[in-house]
Image (cartoon, rainbow, N blue to C red; front, side, top):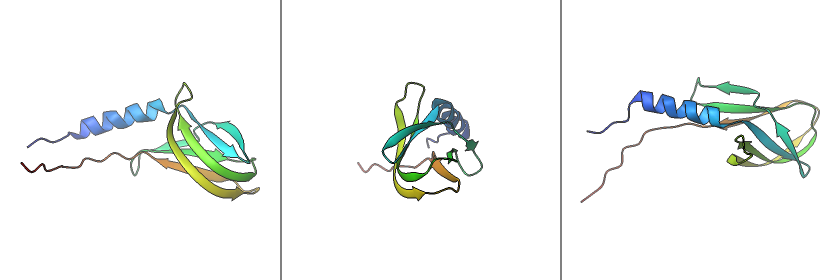
Length: 102
């Protein structure tokens, strides 16, 4: 039986976490560069982006690498007012056995 070891999943999650450099969030048609507010591994890898002072219609959010390449894109339709708002990006990895019938 072939089985991916937990170490491989941990190392892959570390790689993904380090690959994410920031986010680009579109509010009222204007793209804002945002920092990663928080990273959690409690329930799988998650990156969080916090919107504080920005107001308007949030239509898109994307995690990006150091070159600005989009790694994870969320299409949204959220009207943000004066309250803070956090966008979560779950980057969960899981193993799955695939049976091939011969």
